[in-house]
Every structure is written in C-alpha cells, then in structure tokens.
Image (cartoon, rainbow, N blue to C red):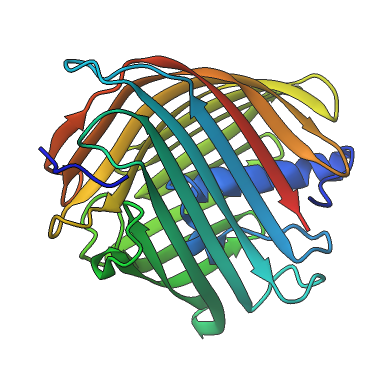
Length: 338
C-alpha cells in the first residue's frame, strides 16, 4: 500500500461540402494521433495536418466529473474531477504547413473523498517544440520534436517527476491521400516502457470522402461515413487507449453522439522511488455537439466503470490502491481555433 499523501475563439463555420471534407480529414487525424491524449507533444504535433483556415492555435479541452461513489472493499468515499487540455500553436496564421510549432498538454485530476492512500490530486504538464527539417532522402520529410514535462502527485518540487520528450519523424507522401509515417519516439511518462525510445510506423490513407484509415504500431484507426449524416470512428493505441464513437448529424451545426473510451494515465509519486500512481477507467458517454462560427462545444452524461488507482513503474506490473465504484459522470468538451 502507498503511504498517505498530503493533501474563446473562432471556430468552424456552418459546413459547406468542402468544410465537411476538411472536418472529416481533421477528425481522422485527431482520432489517429490523439489516442494517447498527448499527441500535441508527441508525433501528432508534426503529422496531424493543420486546417487551411487562417489561425494561430488549435485547442481541445475535456472536463469530466465522476459524480461520487465509494471504493470497493473498504467503502471510502471518492469523487474524481478530470480535466485534460491540449493544443498547438504556430507563428504564422496563414501557413498551413509550418516549419516550427509548439504543442502542450495540461492534465489535472482532483481526487475527493477520504481514502488515506490517495493524494488530493495529480497533474501532468508538458510542452514540446517541433521543427521540420525538410527532405532527407527519396521524398522522406524529416522532423524533430523535443520537450519536457512533469507528471506528479501535486508535489512540483519532485525532480524525479520531470521527464523528457523526443521524437524523430520521417513522412513520405505516396499520393495526395496517403502517407507513411515512421520514427522513433521517447516519452518519459509513457504508460509502458517509459525509459526506452520506441519505434513507430503508421500508414494513413483517405480512400474517399467517406472512408479513411490508418494501420500501424502502436496506433490504428478507422473513420467511416456509411451515409451522409452518420460518422463511425474507432481507434486503438497500445496498450490501453481504446475508443469508438458514432455520430448522428442532425444539421450542419448540431449532432448527437455515443462513445466508448478507455484511458490510462500516470503520475510519479513523490515518496516512492521509481513508482507512479496510475488512474485507469472505462467510460461510455452520450452527448450533443453544437458547432457554429464562434463556438464548438459538446456536453453530455455517461457511466464510468472498471476504475482503478494503482501504483507501479509501468503498466506491466501494478498494485491496486483503490477500486472506485461504477458511477454516473457528466462531461463538457470545447474545441477551438484561434
């Protein structure tokens, strides 16, 4: 067991056919490259296409409140507030293929209740810069990403919680709608093997305006529009990040959706060498999305289940600290381009 711890924007306009295509492509890229919710400090910072519209920044804010509950076995009260914010910034609003960009991620959790072995909260802050170096060989475009982060149990003085971020990426466009992405990426707060740089490879292909996919390691995904007003999405990032979503478009501005998410986040523990506190959960959610020229917001309710707080070096070997009950959740999601 652990020892006790001390305690907007200019957004997309009404959808023309061209904008539907742009949003479909952007949604696919987001689906493929934010499965870990750290894409803006990982390879997605250089792989995900920028919107052709003039803007400096893209942001995504996701707030979730698990409304209450207790921990199984010992019946301590618990409530979890989860806020994940990430985005990226470029220097020229008219440049849709910038050579330099900056990405960030801010994840914060507030853990309420009276469990003696859980902290009052946890935070993961990271920032990274990306530089496109140009063609290296035979049409392969080379990019570099470097940055730093800290993922801690709200003990920001913990130097062991500081981690590095680094990626070398090569992209080859094999057609206007298909590309290979290969590289080597290091993330000192990765859920598995955080001490090792790992290779990745993905083939990304937009077959047409209704179907696109990516297949590779560690990320695979697919987006399909079987009919004009329905979009289906699924993705998998090794080892624990899984998602699926079905959207019904009622009008150009209004849609309803249902989705499934599985997530796994880690934070270094201040008084335990080489160990982290992990929060794992599965969620089913339903909501409504409203996107007009000044706001893009989603809101809804859901159900959090198979929640677990555990400790360990990485996901391969963990010890359970608390097992929260299955509970109702509410969420709010805001997306923006500025």
